[in-house]
Amino acid sequence: MTRVWNFSAGPATLPLEVLENVQENLVDYHGQGLSVLEMSHRSDSFQEVIEGAEALIRELLDVPSNYQVLFMQGGATLQFSALPLNLLKNGKAGYLIGGSWGEKAYKEADKLTAKATILASSKDDQYQKLPVLTDFNSSDYDYIHITSNNTIEGTQYRKYPDAKSPNLVADMSSDFLSHPVDVSRFALIYAGAQKNVGPAGVSVVIIRDDLLEDNGQVIPTYLDYKTHASKHSLYNTPPTFSIYVMRLVLEWIKNQGGLAAIDQINQRKAAKLYQAIDQSEIFINPVLPSDRSLMNIPFTSQDADIDQEFIQAAKEKGFINLKGHRSVGGMRASIYNAFPEAGVEALVEFMKDFESEVKHEKN
Ligand SMILES: *Cc1c(COP(=O)(O)O)cnc(C)c1O
Image (cartoon, rainbow, N blue to C red; front, side, top):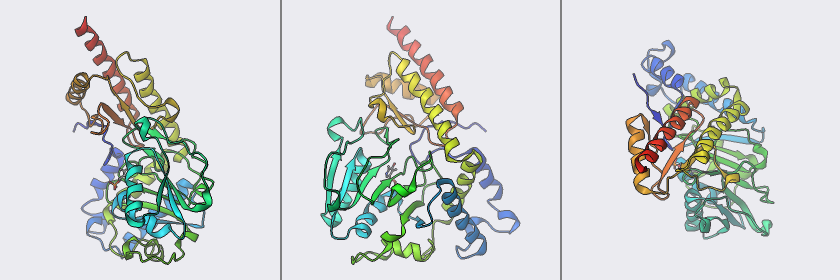
């Protein structure tokens, strides 16, 4: 079996050990004579899976006891709708927009409630840096929303902005559980699993208890956080298989030494790739250095033909999904938790070889 180096932005590379574990137990789950795919979500065995997943998230992130951990469907995208419906009371929703996902989150809140405001945006800088919050009256806002890692543009907060509000909300879809986070700084954190912590199909929502109070709005039952909190994420059939695989990934993260250890590895991987880009005479990374993401690293030769040639040549050598998002162009290497360091090193070598060939052709 040959596995490629898969730089996909999501669904993304999963740990090989996890895939092998899933395969080994797929038909006969731990000697029970049935697959986890066929199991009732009300069975004791599945109960153990979902409780284990929650316990691991609590342990890895050190989630305070006054927060609920929920599993929902609909991706991070459905959270764009759930947030304003659940969190708005009499105030407004403030959005810091650092990329296209933040834009979508804002637009959905605006569409549903007409109470969303853009507090800061880096759109005029082509999202090549994080938005900078200037003075605003925080008491006018029921919550302030940020995107912790801009998946498409390749920026990431390492230090979160001072929102001067107890209700900071973060879309952490593309850097969830990639480094330690002080959960108590946030009112709500949400993330689709398919970038850093599992397969597509499940989203994790970590919400502070007081936000579960009734806000007087009519909220579709599925979108109401109270529904999922009161039923421990078993109100209706949850995405059982996704939760099961996510649980295995969470165990894998724990076995790597937890978030501090995985952060060290992620920093090392990203540093190797940024160093290769910075030392290169043909590739550049367009992002403000202090705002660079450790997860998604865009780069370009600034020549569309050469970029295309690079992507094609890389593919032939087993480096796949390096094409940048259509809105940005160039290349993008997504190197989430499970992407092996050896794959980054191999890419760096390939970039050097490619560069010397390009220079050779020019001479
Ligand atoms: C991928 C992504 C989304 C969308 O996630 P879906 O699960 O496809 O809805 C939202 N926000 C960020 C930051 C993302 O990276």
